[in-house]
Image 1: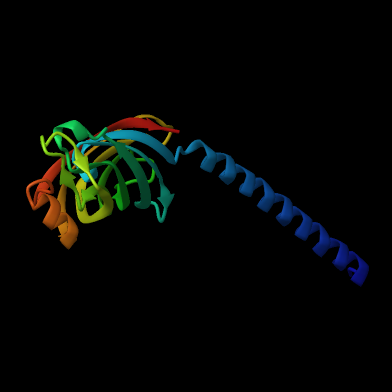
Image 2: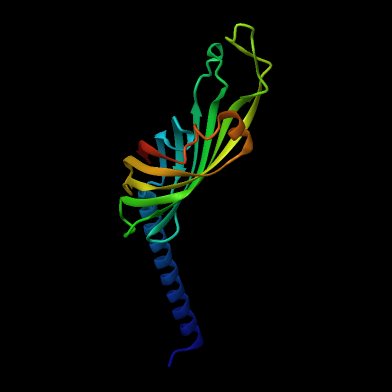
Amino acid sequence: MKTNLQKNQFHLSIKRILASLSFIIFCINLSGAQEIKKNSLYVELGGNTVLYSVNYDRIIPLSTRFKLAPRVGFEYVPRNIKNGSTYGNWSFPIEVNLLYAKRSESKNFLEGGFGLSLFNIVDNYKYNNDRTEIIDTEIKTAKITTLRLGFRHQKPTGGFMYRAGLLVRLSQDEFSKQRVGDDLFFVIWPGASLGYSF
């Protein structure tokens, strides 16, 4: 018959073994999680900023099939004041996408999400007498919201990635409608990205 001291030692040994096993499993999971490359840098042609954008996003696993991918980007286009351009020279796309794949180790995803694009547009301007330069300008921010539906190829081990999709304009603020109308921000337009995941 075991004494209380032996029982306590037995329980303590079991707890130490379980703690050691838990630590080993945690380390294995941690090392496996580190192998999955979650960060991406890519250039998108078309898409949220109409011309191009340089972007960063990070994959956040939600389950074995679903992942979240928040994204931020930047576009810079020099403004040609001599030709009377009234568009600004920067844009910032912000987007949250949901990725779906059949398996957790899949490299191909269906991608869908919502975006907000902030565009820099010149307001309250006047031309010089020869209409070659804008004077008395004020820069304002226009806002466009979009819906994205597309495809994404990104290996869990990282490396080359690409994506393609269609964007649908959901809303456009009154300022951008006044300044550029509906012609710049089409109802539906494509976007294609090439980049690297790490």
